[in-house]
Image 1 (cartoon, rainbow, N blue to C red):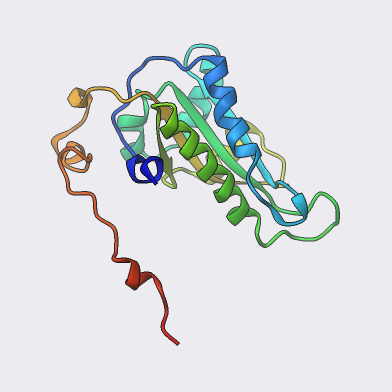
Image 2 (cartoon, rainbow, N blue to C red):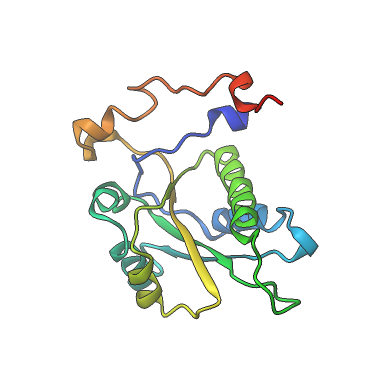
Length: 182
């Protein structure tokens, strides 16, 4: 439970680059997520600032300005993508986004275990991202994620600093509130 409880989504990233081994471990964790028919409908595009700076810029360009303010410091950006159809049959996969979410959950747990942090972003232009990356129709980008080591809050505005765990209480609903009585 400690890894799950200690995970949080920061906006404060160090510019320290991740090694190839660290990046591989993150995606290896994602690879082992469950999926219907073992279809594994998740795909990822990742870019680090140093080795794939042009790709990093294309992903970064799709982010809304509020996310660009802090995501510019993250050393790694990841596009989390769901396949729209099953690969084994020509029909829509209604669970692809859910299954991608399980893969991303595995990745987040692994990141926390490695002392890394990640933040999911729904604040991006899907159209701009598809255009920038020339994504084929079969791919549905669901979120963009910033990943890296935690940095110092000096780069954040006071409003954003207040949302970080050391400045704001981290709460969850009581367990009983998660159940629907019947």
